[in-house]
Each structure stands twice: as C-alpha cells, then as structure tokens.
Image (cartoon, rainbow, N blue to C red; front, side, top):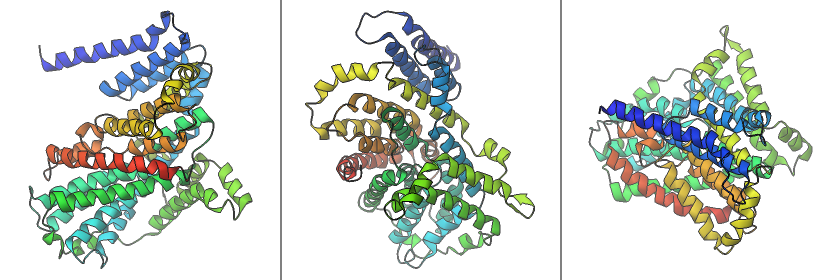
Length: 483
C-alpha cells in the first residue's frame, strides 16, 4: 500500500471517529450520574482534540462550533456568541491587524539593530549575543511569533555571514537556537498579539466571570521570561560553550546601512501602536492616583482601543497612501486558521464550564474531595509539567485550551488553589515550545536550517523546558502576591 493512500485512510478514519464522538456519543445512555449533555460536550471536546492534533485546525474548528451548536442546552446563539462575540476573538483580530501594520515598517529590524550597535554590546562576544537575543525577546513581547521570526531571520543570517561564522560551528547553532527560543519565550510574556495566553485568560473569564488584567498577567509572565532567558544563556555559556571571538569585532555597519531613514509613516504607526498598549495597561497603574480616569479606560475594554488604532492607521495618509489598508491586513496579516481555532476553543471552554451542562458540579462533587488532600505544590506542578510537555510536542493552542480548561473544571471549587495565578502560568507555558519541530512553525524552520539540527534543538529545548518548569512552580507563589 502506498504511503499516501495509507495516510489518507488513517486521516479519514480519525475524522470518522471524531465525528462519532462529536455527534454520535450523545445518542447513548450510559446510565451514570453525569448529565447526558455533559457527555455530548465531552464528545465534542475529545473529537475536536483528535482533529486538531492529527488532521488540521481550519475546517475542523468550524465543525467543532457546529457540533456545539446542536446541543440543545447550549443553542447556536450562545455558541456563536462564545466563539465570535467575546472580547478575546475581536481583541486578537484587531491586534493582529495592528502588528501587521507595524511589521510593514522597518521598526522591528531597527530596534533589533539598536540592541547590538551600542557600546555595551560591543565589549565582547557574549555581551553581543546577550543583547541581540534580549532585544529580539523585547520586540517579541508585542509581535506574533511567526511574524517576528520571518522578519528577523534575514538579520540573524546576515550577522552570521558578517562574522564569517561557518555552518556547523557551535556559534551559528547558538545564534539560530537562541533566536528561535527567545521568540517562543516572548510569546508567553504578554498577551499582546499572542493567542496562547489570550485563550487561557478567555477560558478563565468565561468560567469565573472575572477578567485577568493584562498588567497582572505581565507582572508574573515577564519575570518568568527573564529568568528563562537567563537560564538559556547559562546553558549556552557553560554547556554548549561556543567560541564567540568572531562576534567581538564584527563590523555591523552593513546592518545600519541597510536601514532606511525614519519616516513619518513609521513614527505615526509606532506612536499609534504604543498608545493602544498604554490604554490597555494604564488602568492598573493609575487606579489609585486617577480612579475616575482609570475606570474610564477600563470600560473601553480590550477590543475598542485596538479597533480605534486600526481606524486611525486606515484614515491617516502619508504621500496620499493610507498607513494601513484593511483589505491587505485581513488577507496577509491575520492568521485566520489560528484565529478560527481560537474561537472554537473558546466555545468549547464555555461549554465545558456552562452551569447548565453540569460538568463542573459533577466533578466538584466527585473529584474535588479526592484532590483536596493533595498538597498545593503537587497540584500546581501537575498542570505546569503537563502544559510544558504537551506544548513541546503538539499545538500550542490545543495545549492552552485543554490544560487551562481541565484546570478550571477540576480546581474551580478548590479554595487552596489560586486559579487565576495557575491559569496565567498555563497560558504562558503554552508558548514555551522549544524542543521538537511540531511544537511551533519557527522551531520547525530552525531544525531545518543549515546552521543547526534537530538533535541540538531537542537537547537545549529539553533543558530549557525543565528550567521553565522549575521557574514556573516557584513563580506560582510569587503570583499569589498579585492575584
């Protein structure tokens, strides 16, 4: 049997199993205390999970929404509202459009070059590497990982060439691996233009009825990211031990010469982007100083500032050309498959935690007493290890959806667990994909680059994953000061 035919048979078999779980399992009476609609929702959840992991994330997500809409307790209006009518979906949509406008300017490369062109970075090779990777991580806090990797990959390759570093040298491997890993780390440090944290936070809001503030999230995730970055640099310095002498006297003049002069369009785009971010985080900063103004900004929500920023960029013209063309942005700047999957995962999460479905009450009655005897650190460690391991071998969006929802369902009635703190760490760790090609597209691109290989990426990705687990478990107790 040809491989393609065998693969097609397996593919259709998985689809058939998933469709049965999503639509057929609800027709059976299992005679348990678990409500029938709860079985229906669990069937949709499991069927969707199989499709997302082994088939795809585009049309399968639409099928998930359809399956949920056919459950009478939920109804199509409620499901569509959970999928597309929530703040998380619209926030991500217009944030992607904003970051696309930013990526069309040289600002991302300009900032990265600035980090390696200062006197501090030029003192020695290790400081050069540290400043380069740190600069990329800072930029990545506000830009989606795929965009960041594609935009800055030519810069990394140019630096390797300017330093006369050969393929196969540890130094070139370090630069490529470090570049890919800090892109992943930065994706978990803020929810801005990052799907994985937003999904976990959205699931929490759906279940609990309270939002996790962006500033609160970043107060936890940024320190963890910085510590993970420090661990990565220590692994490079004392385990990989590359010869970085070629980076000490590297002539970066060509990097600067390749940048155009700062334009009016670039300034306006950057100012608009920064203004939107400030509106998101200012309410938490000024709530005691200017309570009325803080309340006003908070009432704007997440979507309205991003939407306003998009309108501003569409209206303002430079040289008779708008700074942002909405048709172009929707076509090239929005990762629609990921966004549709995000909407489906939010709908699934809302269904799992819906009071009318009865899953939470069932688990609270039957499972919560058994878990109450476990130490807090054991419960925290279970979900942190689970999130870290799964995100390194499968979809980040699936990881964020599954682990955060299970944590919410199982622990929502456990008074000893700070659920908000745990959900933040799960959302953050869903982005910490380092070790294997399936974990993230840019990791797959890194393993196939001429400067490194799969075994090197797996080795240092595994080390960084273990370090991230330890740091995150400790960070939970730090997060208790914030939540």
